[in-house]
Length: 381
Ligand SMILES: NC(=O)c1ccc[n+]([C@@H]2O[C@H](COP(=O)([O-])OP(=O)(O)OC[C@H]3O[C@@H](n4cnc5c(N)ncnc54)[C@H](OP(=O)(O)O)[C@@H]3O)[C@@H](O)[C@H]2O)c1
Image (cartoon, rainbow, N blue to C red; front, side, top):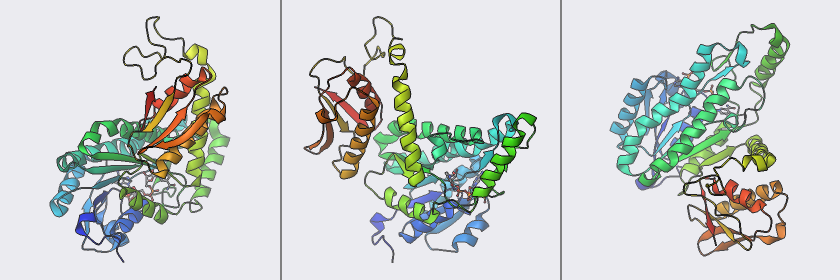
């Protein structure tokens, strides 16, 4: 049975790379939920082979590296369904290898597909979303967009880190038009990404790398077909998230992804304060304490100061509160001077808040770290 009973709830999706892999599952899950899908692929026949035919399915050719085909596909989708609610930048490839052995053209090809591809698709979709004053731009990034852990990842991680910055930077620009962004961060999912159709290994060419090159290639190849993540479940999760009134800006997809987030968050927090005196001593003498002369985000520390961290969305739901508490927990572990007992998670009125009674000077670093997060706001009493 379809989840969508009313036309008013039906979303119009556009998915790139919908002829193979995760894109097929996303298109299938969206259709199963009663949405309409503009499914795109370099070879549209692959979509029909994977999904069959459906009243609410439009198949369109789209190569994310070809801006003309991107514009044509978006136009065709809007012509057919009249609007565009969810765009999923899914198409991807993996150019693997040691940086020194990777052909410069292959490095660029990775960026073309997994960074400039989403840029082109998003550029083509935004005018329609802006006109309708709503929309959600989803980009399938990767845990490699959070942390480049392991070998062979330079080009792939560069593109995925790039797309994270693109999405984060875009979010505040389009929020006034009712358009949101969501970055999905899969760990390892059992798709065709590690097959020869999607992964291209650099030719070994440097003796110094020979042993590691052989072992690392074998390790990546050995993972094909053995990834833990189920793309059908991820696709269903995405359909669920995209229907929320407030979809998350970032979603850790898989238990391995959660671990990557946690490791990276801990590393960053440790790095932030590892040379705190030196880091904090780089401002002009006439600058504010936090090093930003204009519009300082954090007032100077004073005794008895109260910091209230508020969800920008103003949503009081448990998820927001849990997230705040998790951030608070992580930060407290990183700043040695905090006494856990004086930090009180609380919900006041319709806002999720954490009230912090500062004692050590660490509170400024805490405030900066949390205040730099796009989705939270700092109020200092
Ligand atoms: N699977 C994982 O473990 C994993 C983990 C993290 C992130 N991701 C990301 O998830 C996304 C989907 O990948 P997947 O795992 O489903 O891999 P996949 O099974 O290899 O599918 C890749 C898809 O991208 C399409 N594609 C490649 N280049 C394209 C282009 N220039 N224009 C249009 N379509 C293109 C492919 O279509 P063709 O048939 O035309 O080649 C295919 O449909 C990618 O962005 C990937 O980086 C996957």
